Length: 183
Image (tube, rainbow, N blue to C red; front, side):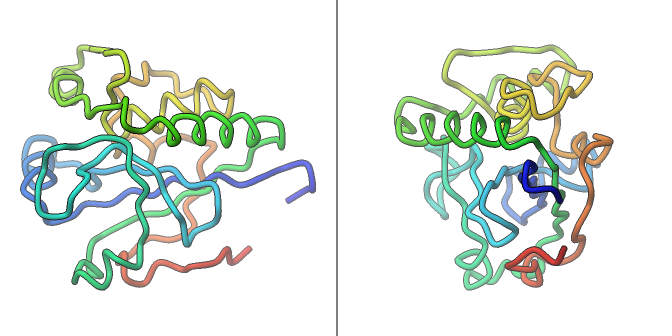
């Protein structure tokens, strides 16, 4: 990696929550949740998901840390970690946009209608509302990190597996996810 490149991480998972099970049942996708991280494989990662562990709603922009999930007994959750090399200016744009959104996270909500609409291949963008993969895809595309070839409102978590610029660096159980880069 040259000094002019930085690494962005996309973490795909499939948990045992009822919502994840419902998505998996409807789509048969291997992964049902996507998160984006800028600080290495150990996280933190950011996504649109439940705000409280035991309640599906309310949901919105959250910071996800791997360690609390492992302590909560979710170490066997299947996951795949991808890395994306981007030029330093793109990385700085990603960091600024993510930081700005996270600082104002209370104004963002989960786009449940958008997620349902995505299933039917109908984009439904809604102001200040995202579902997990829509958020990661929109952020990556808006900052010029990658062209997805598909409307971000139609990106499902499993679609990231097909993005050529993403390189898989780990696939297995979430509990065994490396905390540092191996490159």
